[in-house]
Image 1 (spheres, rainbow, N blue to C red):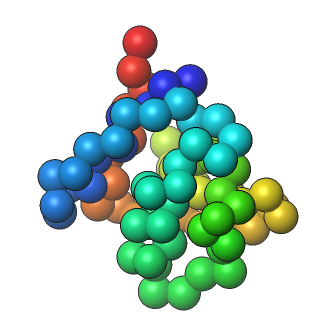
Image 2 (image 1 turned 30 degrees about the vertical axis):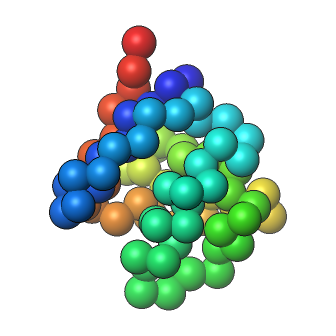
Image 3 (image 1 turned 90 degrees about the vertical axis):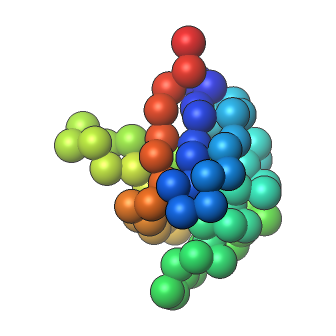
Amino acid sequence: MILKVTNTKTKKVWIEDNSRHAWSELAIEIVNGLDHSGLVWCDIECLIHSDDGTWYILDECGHWEYVPEWYKIEGVK
């Protein structure tokens, strides 16, 4: 799935395939913006979406964190 991710604070936009290791620059920004994180930014797998609308960032070891609320995430057709 192609996602459009917007940092609503900086207005920076990424449009990328949400597949394995596709989020290197975005992953660095998200992980650096977290207060604490057990994520390894170079091993980010993807962004995942729960049924309740919450987005998470997942690394290949199965660690996850909530994507901060200032990121707007949309599917692109």
